[in-house]
Amino acid sequence: MNEHDSEVISGMLAQRGYMELPESTETDGAHADPDIIIINTCSIRDNADQRFFGTLGQLKKLKAKNPDFAVCVCGCMMQQEHITDRIRRSYPWVDVIFGTHNIHEFPDMLEELYENRAKTERAKAAQPAPGAHQDYARAKHEIRSSRETRVDRIYEDTEEIVEGLPAKRLYTHKSFVNIMFGCNNFCAYCIVPYTRGREKSRCPEDILTEVKALSADGVREVTLLGQNVNSYRGVDRAGQQWDFTDLIYALNGVEGLERIRFMTSHPKDLSDKLIEAFARCDKLCNYIHLPVQAGSSRVLERMNRKYTREQYLQLVKKLREAVPDIAISTDIIVGFPGETEEDFRQTLELAEEVRYDSAFTFLYSPRPGTPAAEYEDQIPEEVKHERFNRLVEMMNRISAEKNAAYVGRVCTVLVDGPDKKSRGMLSGRTDEFKLVDFEGPEEITGKLVEVEITGSNTFSLKGRLL
Ligand code: 5AD
Ligand code: SF4
Image (cartoon, rainbow, N blue to C red; front, side, top):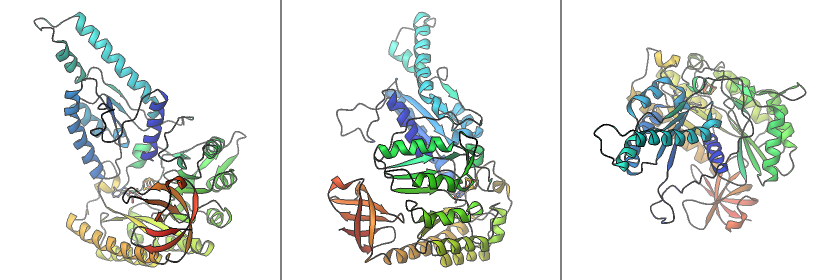
């Protein structure tokens, strides 16, 4: 979601004539240092918070070097008052602060910053401080690091969805598409409902129009985004309500589109209708990300996940009955407050039983403002780490085994382009979202090709272009 927000921010700025600089400008004499830096933030875990403040600290130097420099900060972290208070108090070189509900206003806020600066400069030039000599550069520098020109606006959540924002795409052949915003689930550990607000679904016709336009523009694969796509409830112009599966069936008919993916699904809302759609919609990929979070019903209840271990396993069974070779990935939190060794053992057992294709494993980190942060039975860090290592080791073993079973198969791969790590190699994804590296000409980027799988390791497959 954050990544896509960054694409929207880039798209809006490009439309106004701003240009993105490559990450490192040192070797590229044609480019100056940037005049604007935008930091988009995530607040889901504590280490992101820490990295953000570390980065902000370093930007002070750039600001001192280039008085025209603008530091802009946005994203989930800005929707938390303790964060914005800290920025306002301790980081006076921040120029623009905006939140997740007013991304669309950012280009105007940036213009406003430049106007504020021009106004303040004019005022200072007209009225030099008594006794101060007219060192213009110094005066300019003082202005630029002061709080008086800052543009700082964060909105409360509203019902409104702003449509029609441009987005810069990282790839020409695949794209993210938001179908809904916010979350109503309030899992006990999670900050998202507080930073992204309540669930609201985009109008299905707006989504269809966007996907058709993307497809006409060469996009072969869309990933539908929402915190809980299964609770999508869009209302069309005729007043009819569509659920997520209705949307999938409609998108399955979009000409030129080859693949539909989505994330994320909450197990409590995964319907039989959607499971059936996996079997019936040829464009819906054989892959689902289905976060389990924990394998013990007791922990799931304390997490407020609203399903039991048995219900989750039942869902997996139904999915595999409908689509035997479906790939399943998950999210697991280790060390949730009160997690006993027995609870954790149940997580290991569940993972072994499901045999996930891949898993994102997280150390529980208390997020201020969430119920679980107040629970008294927090788990000591060393216990969390020890359990985490055991889980990762097991998940990696299962991933490697599942990947090894692909050797000898022929897979359709959507080519993403040259492999960043090894020269002359391309990489792409199978229908099951497996990463495949193979040799081939760069010109087939964005195309669907047949690849024979010749080797495998924990996180990827090796192949031969047919
Ligand atoms: N601590 C650790 N992991 C978390 N996640 C969300 N909140 C926390 C937290 N406080 C994980 C969940 C979620 C994923 C995106 O991040 O597993 O599915
Ligand atoms: Fe967070 Fe739960 Fe909502 Fe996912 S469903 S965003 S984990 S509150």
